[in-house]
Amino acid sequence: MLLKTLVWLVLIIAVLSHPDTTFQYAYEGLYQWAAKMVPTLFPFMMISSIMVYSGADLELGRMLSLPLKRIYKYSTYGLYAIFMGFFCGFPMGAKVVSELCENKKLSKEEAVSLLGFCNNIGPAYFLGIIIPMLHACGYQNTLPFLFGMYGIPAVYGIFFSRRFAKTNASPVITKNAYQNETREKLTLTGCLKKACMENTQSLILLGGYVTFTNAFRIFLDFFRLSDNMKRVLSSFMEIMGGVQTIYTGTLPPQEKVLWIMTALSFGGISCLIQTSSFLEKAKLPLSSYLKNKTVITLISFGYYTLLLYIL
Image 1 (spheres, one colour):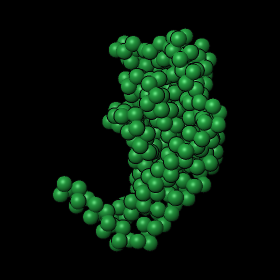
Image 2 (tube, rainbow, N blue to C red):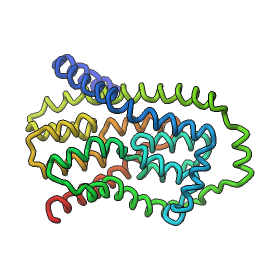
Image 3 (tube, rainbow, N blue to C red):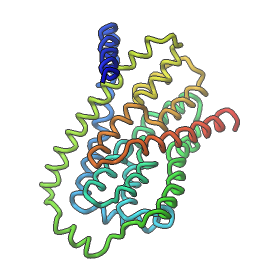
């Protein structure tokens, strides 16, 4: 208890010793949330929640099972979670898996297995923000980077799903279960109301986490680090602002791309805290998610090092 108290006292002292800089960092985090996270995430969050509440997630999962069932050994709902996680982006992967687990559509074991690889940076952010950065750094062929961002976790998930299939029986959605579910569907108005209330609350929480984490970039100023090192470390704290600081720094283009792509693979401490807020509702362990995210980050770092410095 004493250690926790001392930690919080250190945080307070750090903020009070550099109030203007802390304010600037917090403002940057709040701006990133309002300008980029809210308009990018909220539509996807609403659509996903409405699909879960209306039962459309099962239909989409059945459609996806045709091309994916031989690749990923998960249930119909599991395939739906993979689709939403990859195409809607972080933190939708964690949110969808948690919602499905909370609604008893996924077992806890399957949910933990899925979280290992389907909670990644969204394609909208990657294509709109990161690809122009890669072009500006002199890399016009972006296919190898797209593979690194999404192909590595996708391949990792194939092996992960087979390990899950060996140790667990994937739940099977029967016709009777589907009929029972359709009787419990909400009306469209009810779905919209419930989704809007829950997702607005979730977005406000995410904004608080982003602002809080970004503010404590102030700690890096207490160490004798080069400006570029601070920029790299800040990207592992809060990804949106951190990536921008690397890009505007003085590192060689090759190093900029290496650290930007590696930081994106990890997602940052802010993403970790945001993910934990969704996992907590479904009582899913954060430790397993962190372990797999670290493994994917290390694989990605090796891949980008090979790509940029050898190939």
